[in-house]
Length: 563
Image (cartoon, rainbow, N blue to C red; front, top):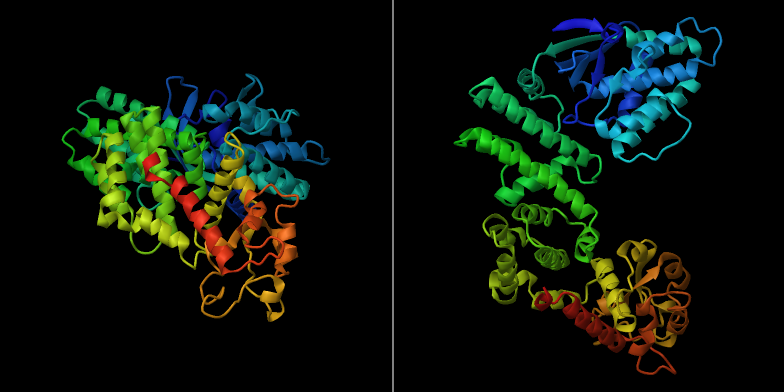
């Protein structure tokens, strides 16, 4: 291990640095960049920038950056912004060409000093190395972070004095570092594992990678074997890191979903149980290979599900409980199921997710699904059995048709977790009756500005509901005493502005506003539920008629027979 500084590290003319594809893309955000700047503001003497681990490549002029890529990339962005800020100023007593030549681009060979991962490098050249005027759109979150870091530095440097910028320049280029250069991948894996799996804030995914690489080193009978397995792992992780910057699910969540797809919803802590599985495997190297390939496929599955055009998959995203579904989807891809079976699986998962969220409570649907997640490899057979159990088995009765209809029909549906979702599905049901598909209204489009309207208001007008077109609020069959106020039959999607404007006005005024300049059929059909259209009253009978129609629609929309 050698102690040096950033300037010495970069000063060797024939050396450049490259971040290999199996390492993480740029991930520093505003918090880390601002902390970097705060450190410079507060530094009064020597500045320490940490430890770097490099691996020699076949090309002797290139060092592969195994550990420290975030800090080194940030330094290059820092120097690029510093050069850009100082080149137009007077009385700059440092050689600006040295900043370019040392840290940004070798001016003789016209080559960049640091190459990022392949997917981001062209963007990095345009944005940081050459700073071309053509503004390209970032294709990944890592590219967005590269641009964000540059913009933070650019803005800060514009507002900072030349004297202070030069002080920061010297602090960074003279910053103490330690670095270690290893000859091969196996030694790099060994050092990385021991260095980073010791309490440093790595993600679980990074801990898994370092542990597996170390096990390859420990279990291999000869160097050629370990080199081959490490290369296989590197290729898988290069694919994984390429997916990470394209998906919204957190990487450690994907890791957990993958482990549950193998061990079930109630698997122990992923890291500790995974390590136990590797250590007890009869053929550890083959187990590692299969595990890593499966993990790579899990990230591919998540990307596929996030970008899927399947309507049931889209509905699952709207329900916002994907932790229930992802393990099944990951297993399904591992089994290479047909498109038809995938559609059935997505349909079933939307149905059971809706039922479980509708009911809520302590009963956990995961314990019922777990057997089919971990044991059943015929996905069609498993779906058939789960549907049959929902229809016939008492242990599954919490999510049966009977229970679903009871919960929708009870008098306290308002503020149920899926009230918006149910009313959106009801709207699609009405659209399909009047305008058959492919007429589509997305949940996001419909719900963005919608709220839940109580047709019979929660506070009756002037305390005299009957005179204002509503039924009795008290009494044996009154709206309140009969629990009709919060019934689904009294709830309707409406824009927030519309809801505020009508408040608790008389029913005739509300009725006249429903459907006016609005595409929602559930507003337009309200008049069909009143007994006397000439003198419309919205009472418990009207609410009951509408409730019954919504329950009928739910029976069709979430019919188990259609799966």
